[in-house]
Length: 104
Image (cartoon, rainbow, N blue to C red; front, side):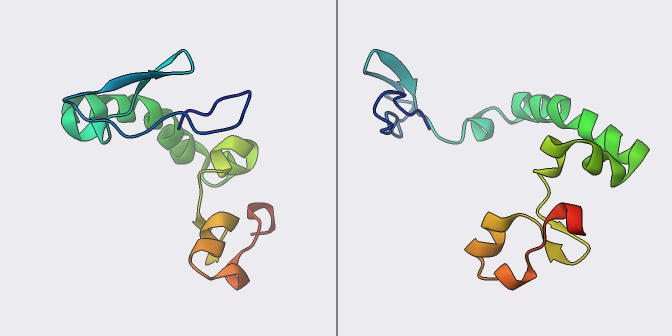
């Protein structure tokens, strides 16, 4: 979602293939939803190229890969029976099952 840095207001809105772009505050926006679904082969190749290095880290180091890379660990929702992503725990009403990853 594009946000105007000066005002903090949302500048993007959903568009369609028939009318995909619009300009607001001097910014050209493209808001067509579900683009991966429109180009499944290309999106699969991009997703694989992006995620394969993480898969390789997990295969080589196991959970230790997450302990060594804070950003990587931020992508984990559950571990050892706990919900380690606080927004997920809050959203599903299971905050009692929340535990910080470093404590699991």
